[in-house]
Length: 174
Image (cartoon, rainbow, N blue to C red; front, side, top):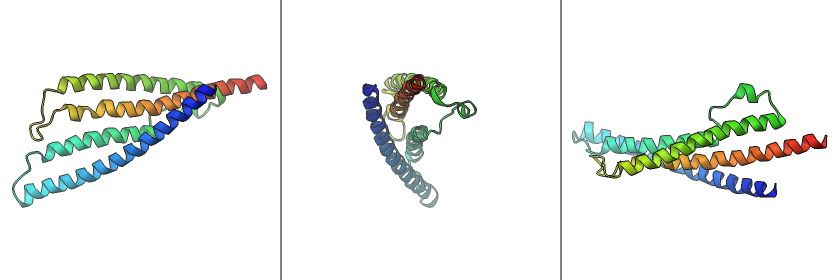
C-alpha cells in the first residue's frame, strides 16, 4: 500500500506540473495566434499583400492550442462521466465505477497516442506549402497531448485503486 501511495504522490506532482506548463503554453499560443491573425488581416486588407503562410500558421497554432486545452479540461475533471450513477454511489462502489471509467479513458488515450505516433511518422515527408515545414509538427500535437492526458488519468487510476483498498479496509474494520 505504501508503494501505491508514493506512486500516487509522484504522478499527482507530475500531473500538476504538466498541467501548469500546459496552461502557460496554451496562453502563449492563443496570444501568439491572436497577434498572427491580426497581422495577417492587416497585410491582406490594409496593405493588399497577403501573407503566404498566415492562414497555415493560424491553423497550426489552433490545433496545438485546442488539443492542449482538451488536456487542461481533462485535468480539471471536465470529461464525460456518469454523474447520475456516481452521484448516488459512495465508498468502494464509487471508486470501482470511477476506476472503470478512467481505465476506459486510459485505453482510449493509449490508442490515440500510438496512432498519433504512427501518423506523425507517415507525415514526415510531406510539407505545409506556406510554412515549408513538415506536417509532422502539426500532427505531433496528438501524441504529445495524449501523453499529457495519460499522466493525468494514470494519477487518477492510482488514486481510485488506493480508494478501493481503503474502502475495503474500512468495511473489514466495521
